[in-house]
Length: 255
Image (tube, rainbow, N blue to C red; front, side):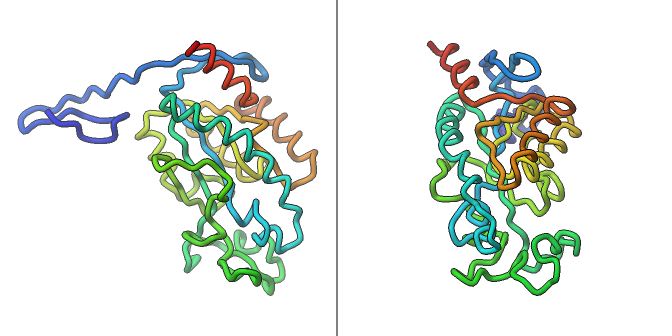
């Protein structure tokens, strides 16, 4: 019989027989401190979603830099995320990069989306060319939409383009996660109070478990925005933890 499908979600088929039993993923259970409660989970049923660590938000000459926003806080997740990802990959946890990368023709974008940071309609908004390098703002396959070079991206990682604050709206993210047989999501990236929070909220509404990795997230918004986000995640949506707690738990299991 032959495998049909992704290795984490496949049938075994032949000309006369189909075995519908999915592969039994080898469990690797970890327990670590989080808020509001300590967590135990199976890494074999988990994935990490890293959101918008891309040039337009995190690099000099990117969109935020052009419109006068201090982008340097958005670079805070680089070190903790890079420290965590190799360990997660080694444990078989899928790494999913979700970046804002619009269609060049912007046909799926409403005026309410285009209005963001271009309120008078006469500035360099979504799809406009940045004066410094000509890159099209938040456009798929552009420098603007690419993951910043400082991030640890591996060839086996998964990339998803998004077109709204949430990575689930009008994208294949949900289908990909279900095909990976994932139940629990770790969240990292920027901005924690905007795209990270919107994606996390949708994930919980779709039935996923959500863990916000506070040290792997950041925002260019005022500090109270991040505080409110962390409060709301703990209060209404899921859990908040530090990546160091996850790493310590993983090392304890393997030692």
